[in-house]
Length: 91
Image (cartoon, rainbow, N blue to C red; front, side):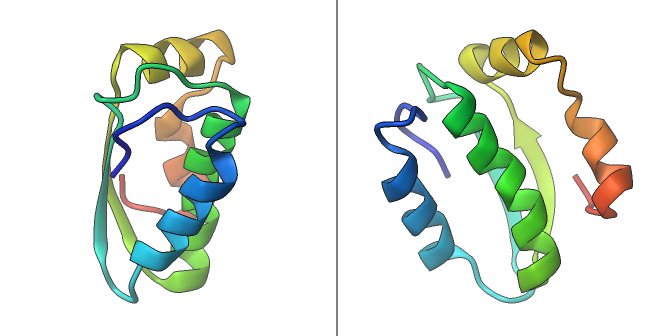
């Protein structure tokens, strides 16, 4: 789903792309392996997917981290697996 940097400079455009691609009852896999740079805006976009899954009734099947996203999540001490339980989303 993401193939470029996920920084504040791309956040608005990436959010619009996300909204346009999501459909009711879809199964979504988030692939972050091609993301070379990610900042807190990019992390917010990923977290927003959890909220959108609730509102738009789609399923997050899996999040595949690349080096940049794994380091960012680790730096912020965010554990994606914990969000499954909070939002009752299948990841």
